[in-house]
Image (cartoon, rainbow, N blue to C red; front, side):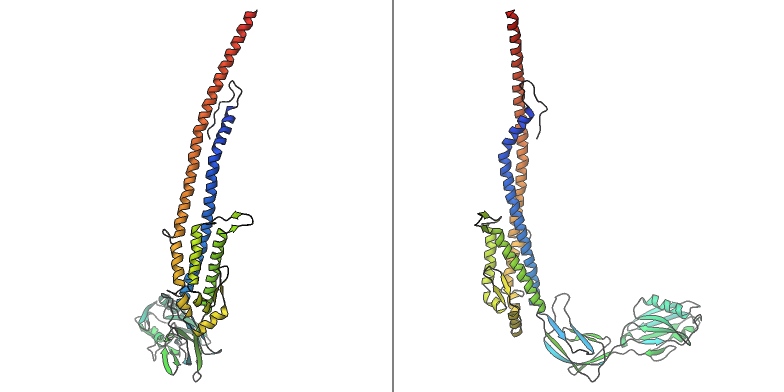
Length: 453
């Protein structure tokens, strides 16, 4: 607020202070009204923000529940000490599994193992040879250039550099008779079996060749495939992990037990769905309680809440109750009951019993297009969608109100600047007039005094 530098001129009045008090008194009613409105709107905005956050949490919990109810989970069990383990495979794109409940008789006949080749003994500093080693496996190969004067350690380093961890790795083992080059196939099974040929150079690399049956190298461990029998049907694999034998199940072989049959059991796993359902119940109850508290009226203290009587809140409460009421029979069968205060409760025993008797009960009520989940999803979407959601539009409207009230305060300050300037001019003019009259009075008094002499 602008203030005048004028003070006492002739009347003795403190004009700046007087103007400031008059302007403050004139500003107060309008400012109080604007600030009160602002506080009310801000409180509503905060309350709606809490409701929006709570409903968003409910929406996330419902999405997880729908996904779990639509894609039934399964678990596997095998006897302790079995030569294999089993895991359920889930499609990374759809999140679904092809597994079905059932049991399978599994016999592990042999395990897949990688090939190992070894050279004869060489002195540690002996130059083995030079030229090119061609190492092949499956449909892949690498050419390794061996420099003149290379020792076994030099050759192993060159092989590892060229292979870069794929197909083969080389080590040098020092035994009592000297050093041996050992080639280890990276991939198990016959597909990973190595062949080694030499070309060029001085011919010394012929001591490091293997054509699959003979050569300068000796095969110390043969490449073998895994063999497993399931319900009498045999399967051979270059890997000990087999994912396409039993639908939706990966068998992980770890011990050959030819002649011993173990039972693999695949069963429905309701634990993840129950966890998701309880999370949804908690999120739903939090939203119901928040809606009730934000619109409650304290009759004892005669005090209203921020959103008491708000039509949007009342509408949300009615819509949520309506969704539950329309599905109360199916909910009860699944262990979901409605408490007297509108919140939900889950009976885990009833849930387990119902799904044991009817595995599709949860999907019909809570899965994609479920009778309860579909209506709730649409209700939450209509309120939370960016741009078109009811809560979003209401929040935008309140933010506009706050901006308008801020402008009203700015406009009020601008008006008060003009009022202050007008009061200052008026009081200054009055003060000047008083000073003139006082001067005239003094002059007349002097003249009268002179005449009396």
